[in-house]
Amino acid sequence: MESTLVNVDIGKSKPYPLEITRHDVPMTNLPPELEGAVIVQVSDLHSGFGNLEAVYEEAIRQVNSINADWIFFTGDYIDDSRKGTYPVQEIIRRFCAKRGVYACFGNHDHRRGIVGARRILDESGVTILCNQNVEIAPGLWLAAIDDIEKGKPNLSQTLAGLPQDRTVFFLSHNPQLIQKVADRDLVMLSGHTHGGQVAIPYIAPAWLVCWIHLRCKQVAGWYLYGKARIYVNRGVGVTGRPIRLNVNAEISVFTLKRA
Image (cartoon, rainbow, N blue to C red):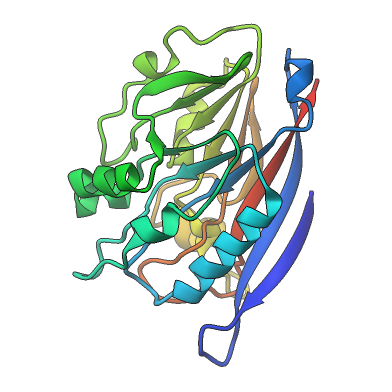
């Protein structure tokens, strides 16, 4: 993994750290013409919480400079902790990719109102996948499931018709689903945990936030379950408290490689 750290001035004494991580992803039976294709994952904007407009602007600048083939959003576009909502559709529509932008829903999208969340993504020109899959390029498939905590997930419907002889990308906001698809050759991209958002001495994020609060074994980064791989993105925004402490926000960049 390679990474670049950008410190964003949000008008406080400590800059807001945004890390761009880069990963090579070996793919079974990847068509030769997709070797080197780039996917960017953006997760957990939590618009309306934290006054992070400067961070969103920097995220847009960083992502668009990559000139990715696809952008995958993995949920929680809005936050339910405040009445007001920053016009996140104006932010999302400015993320640019050459071949398309896709998204799944997160738990906060349902808690705030799934009709509004769907409207935001529609107005942003994003293709929503909810218990669906699609061939986004010849030989490359993407599946996405509804949030497993607050939505109406249907795993069998999401996986229906997917090829068994090649690696599939799978969007699930909540990483806990990975244990149910360990028999599939897929790369799951998730968010939800914010990497714990706060890390303090002697108490690991896995215990403080992810296990005690979210009941989630996955915190951040790569995990392997059987045939399935999962990357848990630390997210761009915040929730609960408008701070990050020793846990960088993240945009993840994946370059496809033939296995």
